[in-house]
Structure formats: C-alpha cells, structure tokens
Image (tube, rainbow, N blue to C red; front, side, top):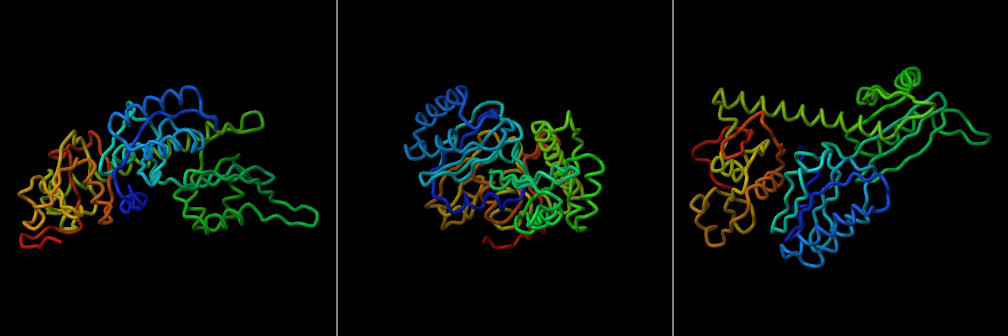
Length: 349
C-alpha cells in the first residue's frame, strides 16, 4: 500500500489510540447498535489508560464523523490533538480492536483498507450522468445534463469528468450505465481518462440503479486490486529469496537492519504476534535486540511492538507496506524487498 496516506502519522505526537470495529449501518444517524459498540470501545480505552481528550476525539469520530455507506468496518486513529485517521475497511476485523500505545497501529488498514481512498463514480444515461466524488472519506454528488437549458449551457458529462479528474487525485474511476450510454461517454473522454475507467457490470433495475449494489461492486474491485498487490509482492519476494539476489530479506533482525539503513522498498508484514523490537529515541533506528543498536543510541533505547514500529519506520523512509497472508510465511512474520543489496561495510544512517 502506498505509504503517503499515512505520512500525517509521522508528525503527530503520541500516545495514540487505534480503534477498529464493525460499522455496517447505512443510515447517517448513529444506530442503537453503534451506541452499544461505542460503549464497549470506551470501556476498553479507559481500561488501557487513554487520556480523556483522546477518548473524546475517538467518540466524535465514531458517532459523528460517519462515512458514506459503511463497507463493514471502520478504523479510527487519534491522539490528544484529534483524529488522525478515520477510514472505512472493506471488511471488518474479526472483532473489535483497541490499542493505546506510544505508536499508532495500522496493520488492519493494510489488510482491510482500500488501496485508494479517493475515487470517482459516474452513473451515465442518455440524458447525462450522476457523478459522485469520494474524497477524504466524504462524498459529493452532482447531476450533469449533457444538453442545454434556456440561457445556460451546462458542461457536458465528459468535460465535467475531465475537470474533476484534473482537480482531484482520484485513485480509481468507475463507470456504470447501459451499454450505449457507456460507449458514447467513453468515446467522448480523453484517452488518458478513458483508459483509467473501470466499467462495473450493474444492471438497470426498473428504471434505476441500486447504489448498494454499486458499492458492493466497487468494494469487490478494490478487493481484487488488493489481492493483486499481494500476489505481485509475494511472487517477487519468493523469486528474489530463491535467487539469493540480496534484494529480499526476512526475519526481525535482518529487516530491522535494512530499515535502519534505508534499503527497504517494500515492507511485508505477516503474523508478527506480540514480537517487540528496540528503537532509538527518535525512531530512526530499530533492532531486534538492544545489542543491535549503535552504542550512542543504547542509553535512550525503548522497547516497542514490532507491528507498530516497523510499518511506521518504513513509511518514514518512503517505502510501501504490504500485509500478506498465507501466500508467503517470512521468518518471524516479517520480510522486505530491498532497493539494493546491502553491503557489509554500509554505515548506519
């Protein structure tokens, strides 16, 4: 997953509260079930010693910052300064997760979050289109007429799509409509936009479209993309390890060294369980044990959870982070694809 979406975490001071829960309600107003879910989450936050300001920020996100049409799960990460992440998950975690820690916990987002949180949906017909922009977990919808009104010529659908794509970095573009409407619109779009459009096989039912069905189709497409990313990463990791090229490594010790040296292109997170690593005060160097840290860092070393520290360090170095499943089982549950092979005398950064 592209690490840019998490970069805001790097400048936020801890401690963090990271909360994951099922949130499948389609209504904008909080349901009784959501209220019960929040009460359980609040009790767990309090038991783990969360500051009241953090708890209040989480509550505001859970109950007030509702996201468009729940996909089954939600992730909220906050500090005393407010909410840092508030995202839908394509699938909910197996159960509620609450962590209060010095570092944020983002592994469930890597596993169940969308690859691209911003996308454009175009539902076209013979008169125009209904266009919805999903940006920063908010949606904006507009109807665009392809014809003209007296005294006012509305922009064509193709022109309006071009304007929106130019102004917003959409990760994906989706198109729904009957075959004729889709064909006409695609023909009118500039080639770069046309090539990015994904057509969803949704049928017009009794003169209209089921937007829940459309959302499910979008989620399925995004899930396929995630599976494709996992497949590609797993295949490359397996190939590099098999060739002993030096461009892949595994195990806590080796991965920590590669991260500290800035060599990691893609961090692969598997089943780390409760493993810990040792980090320097500024979180720029990590090691499997204190003996692996530079001597000057040993005095301020701190023990942190590996599944929190390693993704954060990878993000700070501009590396991608991928959550893997049974496709591969790297040693200690962690592996990495490297930008270049390490050299024995390469100095620590």
